[in-house]
Image (cartoon, rainbow, N blue to C red; front, side, top):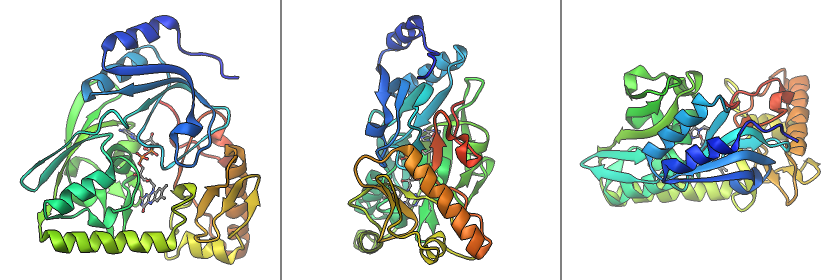
Length: 319
Ligand SMILES: Cc1cc2nc3c(=O)[nH]c(=O)nc-3n(C[C@H](O)[C@H](O)[C@H](O)COP(=O)(O)OP(=O)(O)OC[C@H]3O[C@@H](n4cnc5c(N)ncnc54)[C@H](O)[C@@H]3O)c2cc1C
């Protein structure tokens, strides 16, 4: 049981911000694509970037540990739950607007909506990201990518809330992006919105590429099952999926957590998986791949909540 960090007066202060939905003890399994995770002490859904910033400031001033989540498609939340607050940007903050070849998107806007909007407008640059199920905020934080494209390629500016409560607009050259890395993550900045610069193209051509990308995804990935996407990062010069398959991961199961038989780098929830099952499978895979190939696989997913230090890292701890 988590010792509470949130008193009633803070809840009242949050509610008085308006444009915020605040609830206590919300099971995170219902708010993550993998479908595991115990309750967040406080669960907040802002409807505007202003309300998001106000909530972050109030929680920061009260010293309540806070995690911002998008759609929860790249996280494993512990069975013990999350001490402090989880702020979900999706579904409240979905605004997307287009002016010429520039798109301005709120942090909770879906990557999929962005990809479709761009394709319909004949704008190229994000079609390779078709099928990524998360939000813009999560995708920037992780520098999500696929098919030789990543979000960093099209970023112009990112508006963030800093740890001191100030709002700043960062230019692309003020942010460092790498493979599933951004300095936003390292500097503990919260994404409020971003402006992306795309290039003019032919709508039919962009739609065709989008269709190819999604078709390949459907063929290769277990999209009908609950998962958090790729569990491990690609190690230098190799593929996590290849190493995992060679180590016998496909089909291996603990409880209701199983390495997909379709793609070895996906762990799927067969129904009632616990985060502990997923973490045990990951630990087994890291050890097996290391013993057989001398490669230590690094998790791509973010481990959130109480007790997630288990794998020696809680890189997305509440802050
Ligand atoms: C079937 C499937 C396929 C996938 N394919 C890909 C793929 O091809 N390429 C790829 O890169 N990823 C892929 N993913 C993973 C995931 O969809 C992406 O990483 C996505 O960008 C995460 O967005 P999200 O909103 O779900 O983030 P979340 O999972 O909610 O959060 C991820 C991290 O970002 C942080 N975060 C979220 N929003 C904010 C914000 N506004 N400010 C600061 N921090 C924030 C969270 O604290 C957390 O640490 C896949 C996932 C699934 C389930």
